[in-house]
Image 1: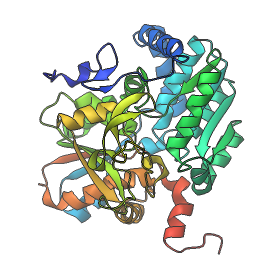
Image 2: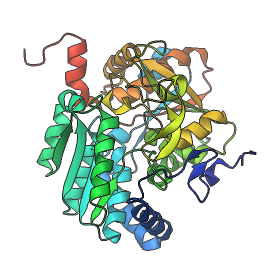
Image 3: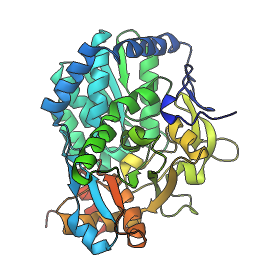
Image 4: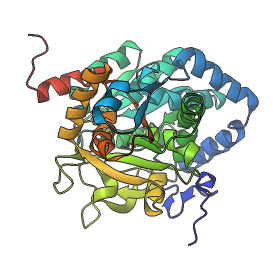
Length: 405
């Protein structure tokens, strides 16, 4: 098929980005999914809805988040000017709250009385629990047993906020399995329940809806970089698991042909091992969680377990829009290993006084690798999509440091 090079026109009216996306759900869920789509299409251009979203974005989340010139890292790498879009300074410490705010407002308009969600690193779970506390709605968060162990600070935060955290001990006991359980819950509670999906995946309209709410990141970057540099950046870079923070940064600029975009997957122990989470680098097309996209799978189509030091990137799939952009070569998809991310985590902490989450540490790891080869007159913007306090126990264990001693 011929591809419409106006990338911002996708998906089509059936929820497809080329051959990716769609709506592969149980018959029981289809009426509810159609209801979500109908209400979102009605509200996304509604001035009152947009005004309410913008009010909470500014006064509750703390937007716009700063665009920060990383002067010491720029000098140390002796390459281009490097800016961080500091979404880790949002309320709750990550970009996830942008999407959760939009979806909770939609759920309220649809008069839903119960909210469910899945989470990996816990940042999405914390953001859902936060907006549910704000709007006085009960909240159930499904989380893999493995992720509960390595993200205990976020589990405690969710519980403080009033959420019920349900441990999932099936499969790999991580994000994929948490999403499976959330979908099972939704099927059995369709009338009163709204499912806040945390990334640009799932059945249509979720991939485009989450992207739209996260696109506030790129819209702010456009204004901020024009003010700081009087021109647009040359390169945009972000980590990618499901892919919401990456599309949040990239979407505003997809039709700016001269801007190069790089998304960094989690290579774990290496792409050539079975211990990674790089769906595009090491996967192929298949269907999972309501959409067709690239997945880590065996020859017989069984979903493989993903691995990453970062719980937020530990997912065997990717959003369908990313699969579309990958096959059409609009975005360059690369990867960084656990070790490279850990080194970048320490590097950023010491040079900039910013402790990044392990997720954006993957993006920084790749940036560290390429920056010395780039011209000094280039401008790079990296999305610092989460802060690292949630990861201190994981990092301490990897560094053989006992925090309580």
